[in-house]
Amino acid sequence: MQVIAIVLGQSQFNISKNINRIFMRVCLLCFFIFITACNSKTAERKNRSILSSVDSVASNESYQVYRLNGKSGLLDLKGNVILQAQFDYIEDYSRDDLIRVDSGGHQLDCGDCTGYVFKKYGLITTKGKILFRPVFEDLSISDHSARVKIDSLYGYIE
Image (cartoon, rainbow, N blue to C red):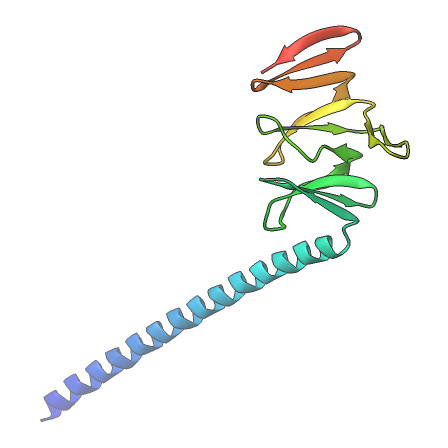
């Protein structure tokens, strides 16, 4: 009988040891889920705070141009920032997933007509990747390539 009690005592000890391990793993898992949820909510709050301070937003089929403190950036359709506001102007339409950007130009407002006069052209993608900072005197997009002008010389970018 004493041998059986000792065996039972050891198995009870092993069971309680396993329960403690399982409990610790569950606690760690809950902590991980909590931290992940907090990080997600922080990102949502950050995007909400950016959107709440945005001057204006122009929508497109795959992105939105937003203006903040006189600079333009890109948002995805969910409102997440994909390109920080850093350009003076971003066109609110794209051609072949390419968008022209400017630094140094100015808004044109002549009563019945409005527009934008570029000073230097740059090129970004609809995903927010900067291909070329504004350095070109002219830039036109066609068939997944761009014709550019620098110092009176023309060239093509593919």
